[in-house]
Length: 144
Image (cartoon, rainbow, N blue to C red; front, side):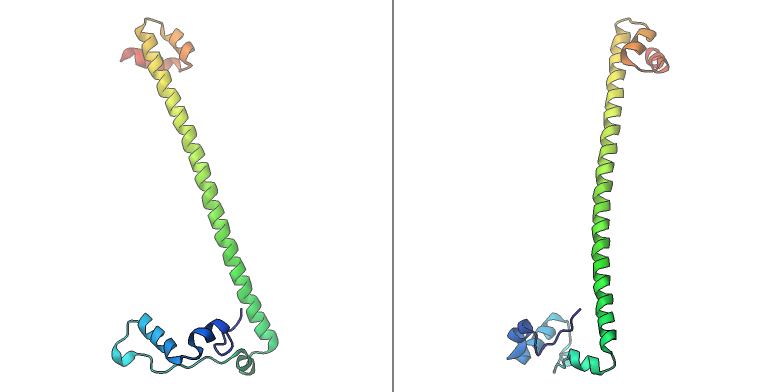
């Protein structure tokens, strides 16, 4: 993690360097402030060198940077795992749904075939063998 130094950052310097009022105007227009709440002046945070002097040792600054780097990596990994898990879950759900739909469709087709075979006068046992439906279901169909 790096500290933004508005005095050294090239992009910041190009946009706001020679026109300090641009930053005030940008911040004021981005916020919904009353006239008396408008930003009148800006104050920059201390540079890295001043932060080091202000209490952080070099080792503490490195540890701080390392900590935030690891947090960033961990968040990225978690986001990736979450996305992958969602995709895998969707795939498995679709597969199960397709299997269930095929099974239901096959059962419905066999039931219709069984009704036609019963209407043609075949016995319940013959229809059960032909459609591979349990004899109980065939007997229930012949009763309706």
